[in-house]
Length: 125
Image (cartoon, rainbow, N blue to C red; front, top):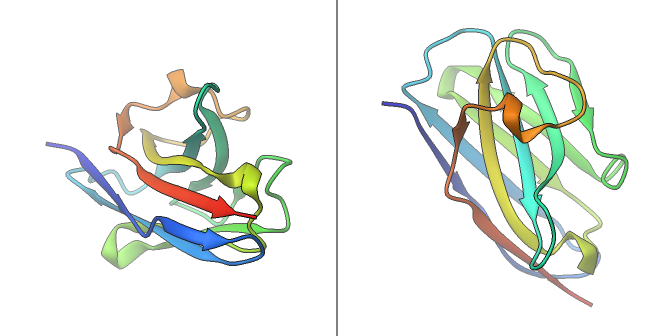
């Protein structure tokens, strides 16, 4: 049974940092695409960052480039999202997603098979 569990969300002042974690269990494929999406109230879910666990290639949404970093601890089957210089527009529920194989470009939700329950990030200005 595949399970993705996010943690690390919380409330932070603008300019602050948070690190989200996603622990994947039951996803045994060595090469898989792990991604972070987010959804703000009243808005569609959007992709933030993705990482192919079989390599080092990462992709980011333009809105977070230079501020967010996706990384992994392969031994722990965990993916992280380091978020720096947070702004109020980053306020959203953040979801971890996984797909078997390489990451597709464009952060399409339909490309991801497995989803976590989300962790809330709130940035106050």
